[in-house]
View 1 (cartoon, one colour):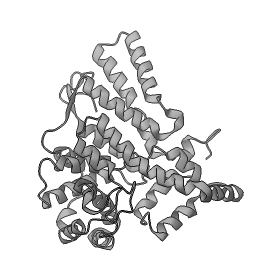
View 2: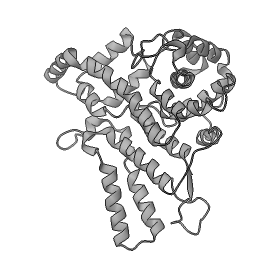
View 3: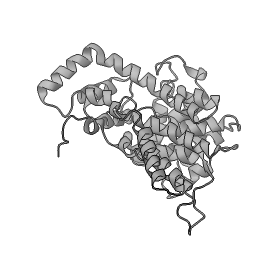
View 4: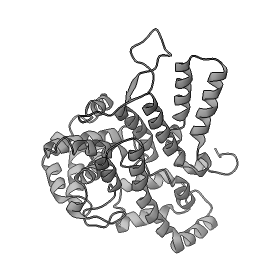
Length: 343
């Protein structure tokens, strides 16, 4: 991520600059796994979002908000994985139900209830179910509200503009006003938020059931979850918007598709961005708060004591900051379990 690509004879050379899009896209791969989705789910929804933005003729001010909202929309959803695992056993299995049922619907509520206390003996599940009935459902609503706020905060720390921050912060609002935090409805919701939410869901529907399934989902939720105008535009041009999503070049398509005025980071800017991502990843568990920062300090100190060249010390410290992204794809039922893990 931070090494040079053009110096084959010098493997320790560092790139003088990094595109922020590369860092955010790399982070999105861990977010995919945290939702039980195949990798590049987020990248594909970004491609669809950009195509829809082009079809709507959005200008250069609006397209960056669409781009980064699509990449960041779900990055806050692991921040309470510890609490989700407490209630539901497997927090990743819980988040995966997002794409199967409407979260405000009866079927979605039933699917959530079936997961309460999963992986535990019947008596424990009964106790957890009673606790959830008393206060857990209210905690769940607060969790979802916090997800978008955490994503907005990360966008701010990464130096993204107010338009991006606002769009990410409204990513869970619904057209009918029944979203989270439920402060906006209809056209009050930023267009980037509305595009991102629609494209996130139709990507999954298309991958599972093809173009017809994606169109059915868009039309079926138009006017409730989705902007009906956007849903209609998507349905009309679905074949075009969903074409060639499974090509091996999805990563390059997303990176090359970054709107004008690309965010390029150098020196301390790279370090600040990696530190922001590291702090964000460490929200996965209460036991890892500040972990990446501490590892980076120790690793960088060791590299200095070994008298490594300055660029290698920098590489070691940066690698330590991002070493923990993998755990995003493993349930907190494993990470936070007291005692040794089971089979």
